[in-house]
Figure 1 (tube, helix red, strand yellow):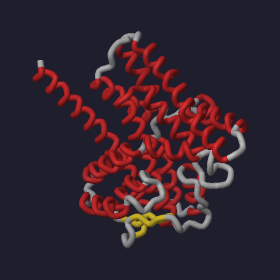
Figure 2 (figure 1 turned 180 degrees about the horizontal axis):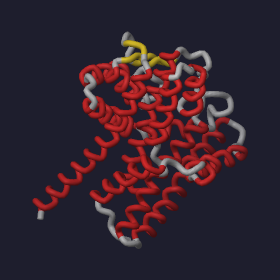
Figure 3 (figure 1 turned 90 degrees about the vertical axis):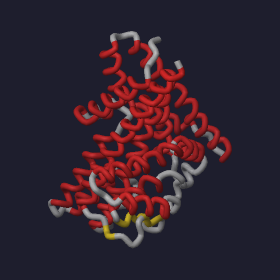
Amino acid sequence: MKRVLPQERCLVAAVALGLDAGLGDPKNRWHPVAWMGSAIAKWKPFAPQGEHARFGFGAMVSLVGAGIVYVFVSTLEWAASLLPRPIDMFIQGYLLKLVLAARGLRLAAEEIEEALAQGDLDEARRLVSWHLVSRETRSLTESEVCAAAVESVAENTSDGVIAPLYYYLIGGLGAAWAYRFSNTVDSMWGYRNDEYEWLGKFPAHWDDVLNLLPARLTAGCLTVGGWLIGKDVGKGAWVWQRDHGVTSSPNAGHPMSMMAGLLEVELEKKEHYCLGEGSKPATREDIHDSVRIMQGAVWTLLGLAGLATLMMKILGKKRE
């Protein structure tokens, strides 16, 4: 197996982002992430009764499933490495692109923004529920729809873009896909209700562990993304420091509070949290700016990875 150099992973990541921007996602019936979701759903009827048994079943699905995905995708990565370098890197880029959601996030935000621009609040409510959030949206005001879209862009910048890129850069395609599998189990089972309380407990906590570093890295990258479009980085950092712990998730508050501070808006989920409290209500222009900040954050991560690679190369030469 040919050794994959760190600088090549940076290039593969850039290829993946380019393919994501240009091609988008295949339909669900052809999308491997959708296949993983279908497989997880098929395991659910076999979940046993009893709190401890359901907890163990959820843990088994999360860990064994992620292990199977890791081995399978790593094998594909190895097979691709036997091909000429340009073909190998294209295949790796496409496989990585399949676990990235940058284009999907941008398009979802743009659809909501367009519906609001046309004065169709009901359609904007439907779109934000369909694409981005699981909460009830039929009674949301326009500013609440905008806030829901902005906070979802921020949170999914971490879960759907930065985290899989992070795991690819440190562990290859197998690690990126294993992360996506674990995140998918959490998104399907990680609910606090009678049906999923114990079945989804391990997947939810395991996803929290996997996102500890990526969520904080995302907040830092969003800072640079905000700076690139002229936002007040000091305000962003202040709101991040103040509000990152007000969400029930140990991770989601980091990118969301940073985005709230950069945009100087209030992001509230009633009876749950309020980020950037006291700031102005969110508008559709803030949805547009959140996407620009997300894009800047993603390329910031690649720039940091490239810089780290260069420094490692320089230090390696000095040691020789």
